[in-house]
Image (cartoon, rainbow, N blue to C red; front, side, top):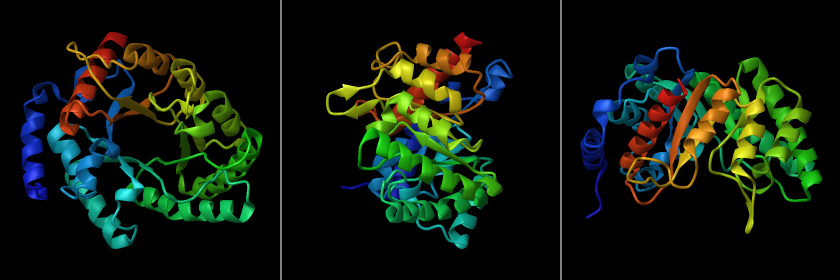
Length: 302
């Protein structure tokens, strides 16, 4: 029988409490100012539950705080009911009630900012405007966008520069950043993406380095560690992707210590978002496993 929303919220609270909530104290209280990072939670970590309709976008900040002791949230646009004032007010009030910081909105499904066709590109840019305004309303610092388009590397790069610049110009007076994740295709090439951001030339246009998204095409991947080094030059957020863990709690597909050392050495200060995508652990278990790993590595860095 398919679980209902109430059952899901109740049982995941119990599951989370059984897999390490005793250690799930606020990062600030553990490390003070020794490590300049705070842990946030990317909504995609709960995409199975959201897609199954056993929880909603309005439940997300509650679960982050109550179940995982995480007080920064990164939304995914496709899980919003709408961007109307009434809905955003309700979401904002929930985050205030639970003392949760709205960090960013990951925007998908609004067209290609790197479309070489000007008409289609401008339409995509304008379709992002409401998300900039929603981010401002909620108190986020950024929207995450995708650098994608059909064409050669140079064609898509030139178009993406124009699309990002136009969107960043709209976002600038609202004090919202426009940040690009390495998210497949050309954007998973660290050199290509940093060149694009450099050419945009706006302070509020940057990157969201993702530890896991370095597949350019079938059979072509970019060096994960080199990519993170390159993307950290313009980072305004970091996505701690995770998939699987060994018996010691280490992520088996990547060297978390090496990645976080790169982040630390870059001088970055801010949120690091948990984005669990694995299948071996449940979503709550995977989130907590990632959180424990982050805290352990933070302690070593300190």
